[in-house]
Amino acid sequence: NSQSNQFCEAGIGYSEAGCGISSSTKLLIKGGTVVNAHHQEVADVYVEDGIIFAVKPNLKVGDDVKVIDATGKFVMPGGIDPHTHLAMEFMGTESVDDFFSGQAAALAGGTTMHIDFVIPVNGSLIAGLEAYEEKAKKSCMDYGFHMAITKFDDIVSRDMEIVVKEKGINSFKFFLAYKGALMVNDELLLEGLKRCKSLGALAMVHAENGDAVFEGQKRMIQLGITGPEGHALSRPPVLEGEATARAIRLAGFVNTPLYVVHVMSIDAMEEIAKARKSGQRVVGEPVVSGLVLDDSGLWDSDFATASKYVMSPPIRASGHGKALQGALSNGVLQLVGTDHCAFNSTQKAFGIDDFRKIPNGVNGIEERMHLVWDTMVESGQISITDFVRVTSTECARIFNIYPRKGAIIAGSDADIIILNPNSSFEINARSHHSRTDTNVYEGRRGKGKIEVTIAGGRVVWENNEVKVVPGSGKYIETPPYNYLFSGIDKADASYLSSLNAPVKRSESTTSSGRHS
Ligand code: URP
Ligand code: ZN
Ligand code: ZN
Ligand code: ZN
Image (tube, rainbow, N blue to C red; front, side):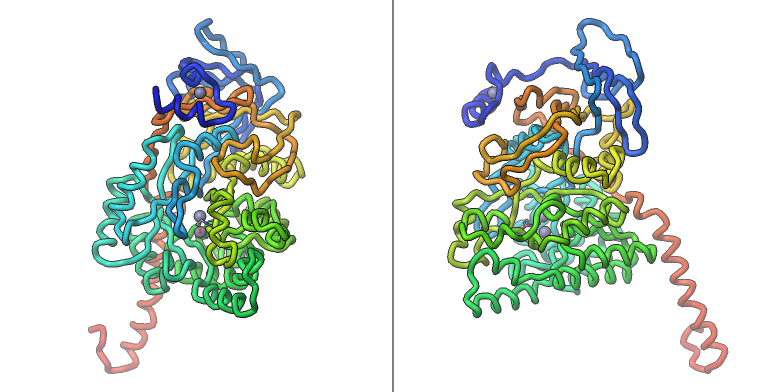
């Protein structure tokens, strides 16, 4: 395959001989501790034709089966990254990892599926989807799509239905930031929330007040602050808290579930906590950069270093990350994404004289699993079963593809990782698999190492080598009406009957006869 050979020559550490693609369709993972979101046990896992066939202790198999010894290691569902931007056209450029390099990096880090955001073309959902279908042809792992909504009219409304009913997309993202580009106003958000509800699709928000961010940016430029630190200073946590609160209240008003992407601050997290406590269906997604980094890098005197940390909402002062970790461990936040949107140092340098021109985005698709393990499990903040839940299972449930994904049980797709808790990882731009030339986690080390990744029943990461074929990844359709929608109709019915009561009372005490 000439396409794969092309990649072999360009890549580092990719195996040769037609990429050494594993042809074995039968695998036995022996003696590991199999971990699902609610249970773990020592068992063997038998895989055939890309599907998990059996999970049981002491399975006996023929000698045509490749056996992988997992004694003393954890055998877990492959990670699912709910939030990526591969080959995204954004801020005058395009993110450097495409559906091949980004996915190869993901697989090297134990992530076997991701959900990327389709961006409409001039507001057209269908044109946007066609463009992303084209980009995704080179995929080497399974993927799904969310779709952004950037304008609203009868055509968009109709296309939302087509996309949900015919194209397998069950989630729409509304950007409350990026004024003049992707941003939507409250009127559009309300229309979008209503339409999402009528289709059983999940509304997602990028929650920052874009008008206030615009004001904050002008303020920084007037003060002569043009460097990367101006990015953080121009869009403080209060603007994230405001937009999160507003989106939550509007979703509550419409009575439809809401998913808040990249929760970066205590301010936003506390709004989610409050809403969940009152029974509202709100999901909060921290991203790994927000959990483990702080804003100090943005003040680095070296522009290339400081600019690599520019993403939105910004990476916050220390204290926010620790609070987000706590919220993840106590269930206020439910699943971890990356917002992987990698730009290289040449692209970041577009903003050398003006932070507003630095393309927003950081890497993470390869690092997420290791960093969540080290930061959350090794530190004792969450259990190993919780690790599976927040990196894989909860994402599969929310996007309605569980238990095909997110589980190691008979019948599930064979997307599996083997993690050695006694080994260690180290992150640097020299050895990572992303195409970008920097890494926001440069130099980080930690405990726990994903030694094997199996995607669709094929060993794609083993002995520190990625072995993948462009075009082998499948599009995973995500059906509407996930579990967050159950009971929504009953809540609507009781709301309507609560409106009826005062109307009846007024009819008996006035002669208006409005409701004859
Ligand atoms: O800085 C970021 N987050 N870039 C990607 C686009 C988005 O807002 O998710
Ligand atoms: Zn190769
Ligand atoms: Zn965003
Ligand atoms: Zn994003």
